[in-house]
Amino acid sequence: MQLYDKALYEALRRAENIVDVGGARVNIKPIPDDDRPGVPDPRELAVLLENAKQPRIENPTIADQRNSMGFPNRNLNTVEIYAKYEELMFGGNTVGLWRYYPRKPEGKKNRPALLYIHGGGWMGGTPYTVENPCRLLAERADAVVFNIDYSLAPEKPFPHGFNDCWAALVHIHTNAEAYGIDRQRIGVGGDSAGGNLSAALATKDRDMGTHIIQYQALIYPMVTFRTYTTPGYRFALEDFEMADEYRDILMPGVIGLSHTAIPEGAPMHPGYLPHQDDMDSPYASPMLSPSFAGLPKTLVATAEFCGLRTQGEQYAALLQAAGVDVRTIRYKGSTHAFLDKLGVFPQAEDLVQQMADDLLAL
Image (cartoon, rainbow, N blue to C red; front, side, top):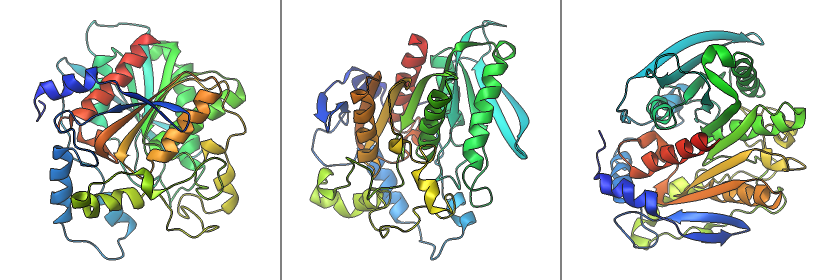
């Protein structure tokens, strides 16, 4: 059950305010119950204030970072959802693959499908954090939603995780009939690092001419590691309007993900990309692809107070200029990882429904 009035979600569903942002048509969805500029959603603010009370760990280990990720979200399903699990071997890696789908009607075939890839900076995160969003998406789209446990850095650096996801995608397509899905209606999606991997999969699928992916949902994605040298891209703090009374609490989420503090030429993510040249691969930095033509129908979702917002919206502009069918939504008042807060933030439910609408339309 949601922890907010359903009217807030319904207001978000109706909201449409299309503006041009660097060549991208962006629907800027308001905070449903606060029209002040530069302020966090009141539910977001409560979480930020609570997090600020928690003691900080100096020099956190990878285990510390992994344990700090995620948020206790809620199950909003209203019908019975089957959950199945299997383990697959790809390139020497053991990859877990969950799948969720509505139980009824029994034995239904030719459902749409989506491979969901969780975030966590390529070195953390877990399928369990996104299980409730995946289950709800399965219900709302009457789809089979796959949730992958791919290899993480630094134990398995690039391209291990990417290769795991690609192999899983090919496996799903090959076994479409057994999974009860329509192989002509397969999409990918993910948040943050998962958005990066989803965009990279769509790029490889286009490059190889396999045309498995008909849809991609990129949720506050990181699409370039070359933040200093990516043509047409810039990060500027003045692009983020923050009310003075909330600046101190919002600033870490903006700067912390923008990578502007890392010196030019330094490895952006040495655990995931140990080699400088890896950053130039379009399968690590999809925004560095020489062409964006031929990519599938795309949803780009960003958060107002997320340092990756400008990357995501610039990528949407590039896709739009290349003739890709792209829809871009910015959720005001929100910060990075708001999808994790399904049932707590109405924005998360609206985003799941946006993806469901897209899958139903394939």
